[in-house]
Length: 139
Image (cartoon, rainbow, N blue to C red; front, top):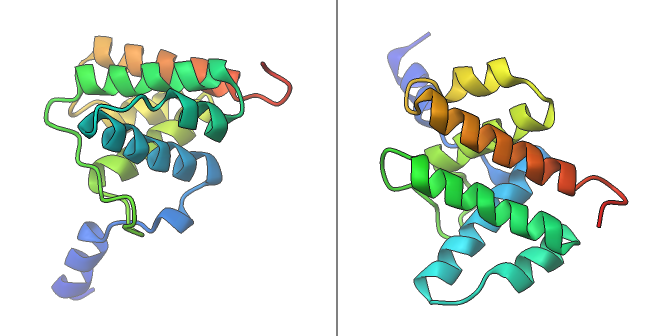
């Protein structure tokens, strides 16, 4: 493989449309939360509409807070209209997928280099609680 091809493969950011539905929705909701924070607006009404119930909206907000508290650097978020996920957003997508599949080993593999064990535990539990709240029939 040529070095230019390898570099392109390593640095290419995934398209939002190529993520799982749940992961893409989580990334777009995070973008919305960031926009609201920057404009001093409450994201909860839109999160409730987006997730279908207030419990899921509250639990997603806890996920966002856990990430904000634990991330070693500012979380890189692409503009709302950007079709590609930032590297942090792509990592979030992988974290959501791992938590949805109850795959703690995959979650830890994705995050171990940048997050300590307490931070990983907090985010994994927050994601699990959010995913359970999103279950069909859950209010």
